[in-house]
Length: 504
Ligand SMILES: [Zn+2]
Ligand SMILES: [Zn+2]
Image 1 (cartoon, rainbow, N blue to C red):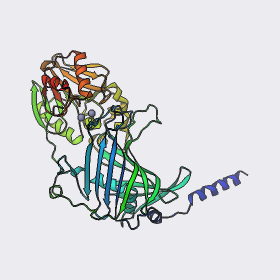
Image 2: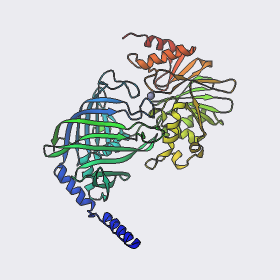
Image 3: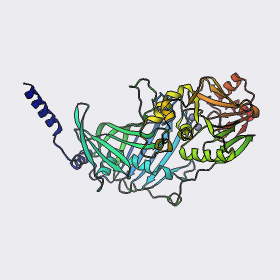
């Protein structure tokens, strides 16, 4: 009896494993036929939807802040791996709480992004091309993660796709996989109707490492001989099923309605403008400005840091962007202030452009000073993900103190860094739409406030963040002469007051 039961279990297991082992190519060919991709050389689709500002949520456990895409058109030419994406984004009725990258949008913004093979560019407000050499791989991945681009990419000679099957939503589905551009694994789930249901990959990111990037395609309908889905994209995970929930950002892009689809459109291949063709990535520059004795602004890029010389160590305020920026700034700090370790790195807030350099400082041996609300996110997310696509020093030579958790100093309302002579006071900014847990640094000797995203001297009109900043300076009764931004040039306090009191 026992033996018979064992035998029948074995048989059942064998049958499950021997679901007709269709090879990847036949699965792809069936999908190409069902989807109308066989004779597709180019496609153009137009619709409306939404966009999430990745890495710019109000708090780490919230979703990416969202804007409407009031118009959206993408044209892809598969032979040349080129794409023209044009959209207008507007605040619409989306909540205004939370977000950098110009959020909330007071006026609609037009964006035009291009890729052609290894060249990527955008158009500035004057309509002139601006090279974006760092974006070319990601834009090609965007093509390859459309349902059509996935099938085309997986069927390119030499792609060597593999296939597994699994049960999902009551169906046995195929997951076909190939490696694009030499390193990006791209997986496409093809359902029982031979429609591409999901395309997933990972892209390198300085905050979370191999960033999960997924497009979910549902609600297919036939338009002009091609199957057209609802587009729904995630970047990173909402870990709402975990306790505690520390990472909430995931919704990155969606097209809810598609109004027009054209196949094999004339002039779909875009020509690369000459200045773009020859563009090289901008070298990282650090330009130092002395703000006081042992006090330096480290500028020269889109984001600044501030270095403060203490008795036997250095404090750096803000580690923005990525490891490349951090290494350049750290090198300059050690040139300016030799023979002292960087013991603390102050992080103003959790937005990714202000956080991407922090791992380099942790590897350097610095303790992270941040608002207490950020700690679970930093502790879990920054260390836990795979970091294979573009490994940094932290990934290659991991410091155990991060995983063991004793490299944080957290701030609720006020925290003071001092050696008895030099003083840096950190304060929480209350009632701010831009981000929860935002710190400013006040340096009494020079009457300087260091702030991120609370005042941009180049802005045209004051917003709710500027007003919250002013209210907090009044609440804290800080005697401020100069406002030093993580963005832009230092500005006199009087200039800020005049700006924020403007009525239009
Ligand atoms: Zn921000
Ligand atoms: Zn910023």
